Amino acid sequence: MIKMIIINGFVLGGMYAILAIGFSLVFGVGRILNMAHTSFYMLTAFLIYFATSNLGNPPVFLWLLLSVLIVGVLGMGFYRLLFDRVKEHETATLIIGIGLSILIQEVLLLKFGGHYKGIKPFVPGFVAIAGVSITYHQLLAVVSAAATLVGVWLLLKKTKIGIALRAVSQDREIANLIGINVGRICMITFGISAALAGIAGVVIAPIFMLHPFMWVNPLIITLAAIILGGMGSIKGGVIAAFILAFVETTVVFLSPEASFLRGAISLTIMIIVLLVRPQGLFGIVFEEELL
Image (cartoon, rainbow, N blue to C red; front, side):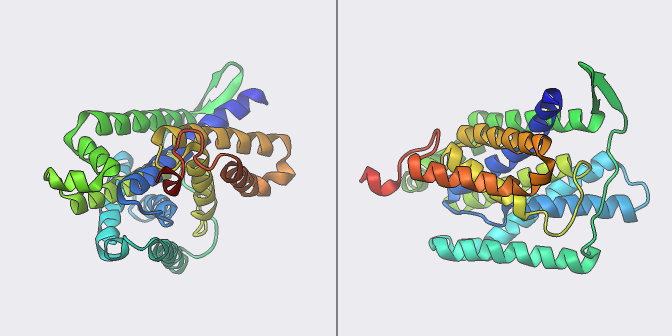
C-alpha cells in the first residue's frame, strides 16, 4: 500500500504542481486570482477526447501539443478581452474568473453531456517496479510533470521573457520605466499559465474520468497549495502541491469511503495556515504589514 501511495502521490502531485505554478505566475505578475485557471485544464482534456473520438486516428502527440497551444492562445485572448479591462479590481476579476469557468462548463455540457468520459492511455502497457505494477502512462505523467517544472525554471531564469516576468512581478513601475511592456508581459503570462493548465490536462486525461465539473476539485486543491506554499511563491506552491497530493492519496487509500472529503481536507489545511501563518511556508506577510 505504501508503494502505491507514493506512486499515486507523485502522479497527482505533479498535476497539482503544474497547476499551482500557472496560478502563481498569474498572481505574481498580473496580481490576478484567476479562478478560471483549472477550466483550461478541463478544456484541454475535452479537446483531446474530441480528437481521439471524432477524428479517426489522429497523430496523438501532435494533437496533444496542438491542444496545449490552442488553450494557451485562448488564455491570452480571454485576458485581453475580459481580465485586462478590470485587472485593477480584485473582486471583478474573481467574478469574471468564476463566470468564465461556468461558461466553459455549460458549453461542454451542451456539447458532450453530463456523462463521464474516458480516454485510452497514450502509452498502453505496464511495468513492474519493486513488486508494484505501474502503467507506462503513470511513468509518462511523472516524467512530463518533472520536465515541465524544469522547463518553467529554465524559462524564468535563462530567457529574456522570464527575466521580464520576474521584473514585472517585483516592481511593475520600474519595469515599465526601463522599457518593458507590462501589459504585453501580463498577457503572455496568462497564456503561459493557461498552457501549463493544458499540460496538466494532457497528463491526467487518460487517468481520471472526464466530466464538465472536473475543474472544481483541482481549483480547491490549487488554492490550498498556493495558500500553504505562500502567495506568489512558485517554490512554495510546488512543495505544497506535493504535500496535499500525498495527504489526499493517503486518505483515499486508508479510507476509500471518505474519498469525497479530499477537497474538505485541503480546505481545512488552507484555513489553518491562514490563521496560524498567513504568509504560508515561503511567502511574505500581508502587504499592509509591510507598510
